[in-house]
Image (cartoon, rainbow, N blue to C red):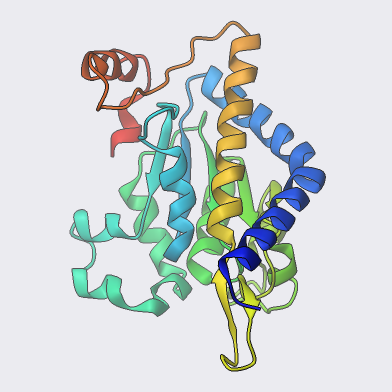
Length: 248
């Protein structure tokens, strides 16, 4: 059945599954990322398509942590590597060469870490990017749907999917195809869930990273909403405490 009530029920079920099955992984990953921040590292986040929402959830926003850097295929146009029309090609995320072009746009240092997000975990650009980072000794965290990724073949020449490359994995607990609700008159499902569970996972990571840093006695640079009085001065001050590479 397709209705708002049905989607609410699906969200409740999916979030319950995330809570009951993924909290240990979330806490483990947050500990690793907090340690990287403690030693001066930046956490880079990369996703294509709507997986970019996960990166947006953690980067450069009110209540978020400063040392987070969003990597996007849009960077290729901003840096003059690709024409804007190239970014409209939906097959771009399948091309491993894109990962090399993106890496050339980034200043990634040994203390850093990365989160790579993909519901399917199968496309060439993100798998290649994960492999390139691992070659540099950068810890790679994958956020993916294990149900979906186990049902499809890789599109990377290695035959590997994101979960087979990443150092640690968080399951977004979404179904094959992402969408949740079905009506036979549609012929397919509607209403994807990965953005919802992804946002919750992202904020759980933010909470757990913050908890770790506070317990270690480390200053936590948190951004305030720019719509609060005095926020501009606050944000400029906390940004000065963190490696400016996150602004690239």
